[in-house]
Amino acid sequence: MTYGHTLRGEIAAPGTTPLIGVYDMYSASVAAQHFDGFFVSGFGFAASYYGLPDIGFIAWPDMVAFVERLRGAFPRHHLLVDIDDGYVDPEVACHVVQRLERIGASGVILEDQKRPRRCGHADGKQVLPLDEYLAKLDLVLSSRTDLLVVARTDATEESDILRRAQALAETDADVVLVDGVRSTDWIRRIRTVVGDKPILFNQIAGGKSPRLSLTELTELGVDVAIYSTPCLFAAHTAMDTALAELKFADGRLPAATDGTGAVGVRESTELLERNISRHHEAVRQAVAV
Image (cartoon, rainbow, N blue to C red; front, side):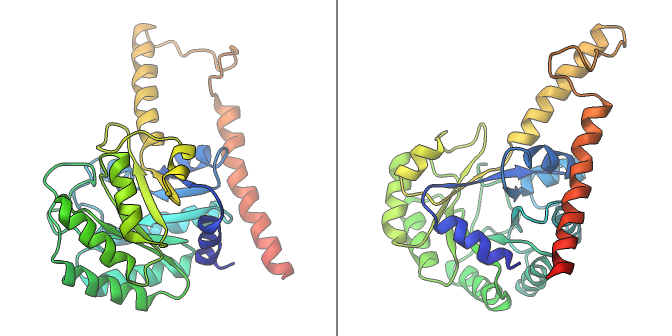
């Protein structure tokens, strides 16, 4: 299976393709019940793996190892991977891209931020000179075989946003992302300068961009939508609530089968067993071919 080709076909189809941000294997197991595409979120991974904010702490071997585990359990899902700035060095970026393609990633997002980097919806972002980023992007593009590449700009000045978006659209990148877009009017302006190149929109709760439905995004000409943090933030809320209730109940666990949809050991085990069955089915199909 050529994962990049498959994701390109999905993006080219009518409508906006949703990719759900996952931060560990359990969140991916839950998300797989509802969606067939994942976004391997840098925000979520930094929070889950390191317990740190998304400001450049991720080491590329950790990210590659996570994607390898995801691909083993989810052989049919799209996997778009956030590789930040390519881990600073262009040669490292190329090495990571080649590693990710070999283990079955569908695509990567490469941003134009310079260190210290920030979440795309945070204040204080700084970007590389455009020529420097384009040179790094060109090396990454030449190092991939089939992997889909999203070129991302974190520019914040209005004239620079459009200048960079147009320049990214003129490269061989498959998709263009302007992160932290603040209004639907700006989506339209970006759509105009990018031309026929697919565009990606990043939604994050509490972020700078408007909350838009897939129908609204399709009408605006958006081809892909990534949802960076719904799993992470929902888990945060649910865990905080559950532990507060446990404390209030003097340590007595709630019943797992009380009709409220509560999860117990049986439901959790059944969820995780599906990861084994998906893997075995993919191996059987590969052997048959």
